[in-house]
Amino acid sequence: MKRFVWILVFALLLAGCQQNAPTEAPSKETVTDAPTAETPETKAPTEAPTEAPTEPTTEEPATEPAEPYEPKDPASATISLDFDRVLAAGQALDEKELEKVTSFLTAGKDDGEAVPWGFVRQTYSDPSEIDISLVYYNKGTEKDVSEEEAAAAYTAMGWEPMGLETQKRTLDAVKEAFKKYTGKDLTEDQLKAFSVWIYLPEYDAYYSFVTDMPDDIHADQCGRGCRLDKAAAEALGLPVKADEMIAVEWAESEKPGQESPLAIGMVLLVPDGDGYRFAANLLYE
Image (tube, rainbow, N blue to C red; front, side, top):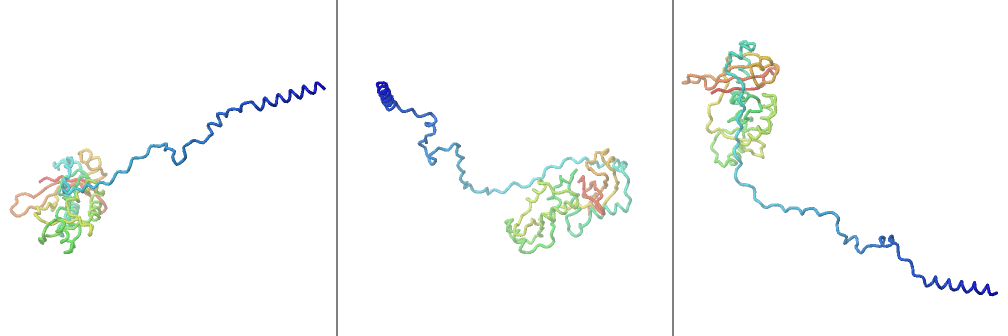
């Protein structure tokens, strides 16, 4: 009986101690998992903001005209006018082929066309050096120019109508002719030459007027000519890279009162089907 009483007393004392024990501190995981005071709406961005877009400028476009087109000086053509040496390195052309070359060089001249004889009006050792504004100097690609077009061109020039002959050129026609007669496309620098003419967007064409027209250079006469192979051309230091080419002396016919031709030169042509392509030209005035 006494033993039972002692067991009961011990059990009561143990229960009282457990009720008075402190509660356990929250774990670290509980602290870190607690929600922060910041809300998604107020949380600062983690990336730096991009720069604010610049406001459009109100600067007026320049009113000064663009600088006039000035063609680059062509590279010195390594073509010798000592045609005896050129002729000795090649096979002389017969009279029939010389007549064919003459017909090619003068085609369209009597009709006022700019090509192909326009390609002998300057010196160049490669078609990329050709100043297209000289090929089409005072010459157009279109024969018919309406009165409305001419009047619009005068207005764009700031001139009063003077009844001058109007030349009209289209970009496509010039590109096509250049490709036909050289086998190459116009370069970006060559296209800049169009700025010497007045452009009318409503007609998509370029215009100019015949004013003080200098003597045109025409290859009216061909002297001697020869056919050269690639090895002979390289030995002579000629700039043309082709398996075969033709070198021809040319001159413009003497005019009344002149003791000598207006111009002489030598042209290098590459045979192309029934015609030729201009590869280089040396003009001597």
